[in-house]
Image (cartoon, rainbow, N blue to C red; front, side, top):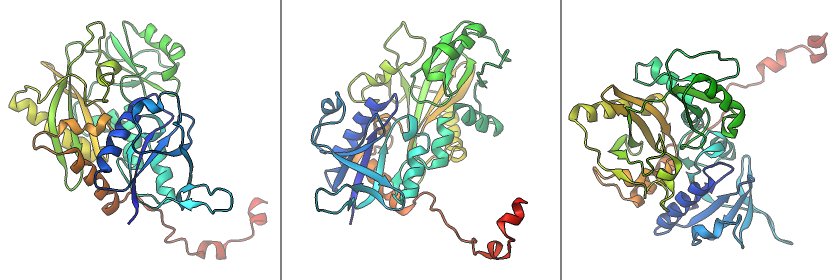
Length: 366
């Protein structure tokens, strides 16, 4: 039997929150498993850290006593040998991903782990990529008749949009509420492209709807699709027009400590609407593991906003109806990683027939 790895951190604006989620998972898994805590640094390197460290140990960067690791294609994580000793392959049964935002949640890390042959709990390459791309995600849902607010790619070439302001401008590829701006007019929205660093990789624009409030629900896919209770997050800052990063994460435990109404007080009709949409999103967006789906709702209706494929605290606080312990949630992520691995690449069909019948490359270039 191998160990269970928990990977957290990464070169992402959500690096610090990822550490909190990762350390929570490490502590819980260590109750009944041999755990390897793998910290992904801000510069993209991997190190093994003491599984008993507190969050404060990461405040100034890589904790003291950490051991460098390499992620090698076809092999896995490797600890470099010292002096005359050989490199050591870290024997893993599976990895749990607590890597919020950036390359940890957009499919990049998932693709690397697939190439390395490491089974992992959480989104697949495809699921991570579509979940991180706000434009692609909303387009897929709209094409299948799921209610979403209009959303357009905001580019220098875009001259207008077919909906009225005020507007909300978001990073196209980003999680949480980092980099989001609410603006009064289209000209100001366009100006944000050059002034907001978080929009450099792409941006989307949509109507800002002050009449709508946030609802959130989590889904998990193993052993079968299960929905959590529905929560209504509560804004703590009246100065902010949106549920911002501080509302979500500054309580000290990631999303687990954010203020909320849970379960949310909703009509049976609205509850059924959220449940139906959540199941459809889970299928269309290839959700795997544990994800959180965010809605906007009010008298005007209920709209899917986005999906967070690796949510803060792994959305453990939402599974109260029926209750699911954090240990069970993590155990099922491990079991899904092992029993239902993501895509494994194959060269079946590449039998050399085309190569044997091909003329010389020189002739083809003539």
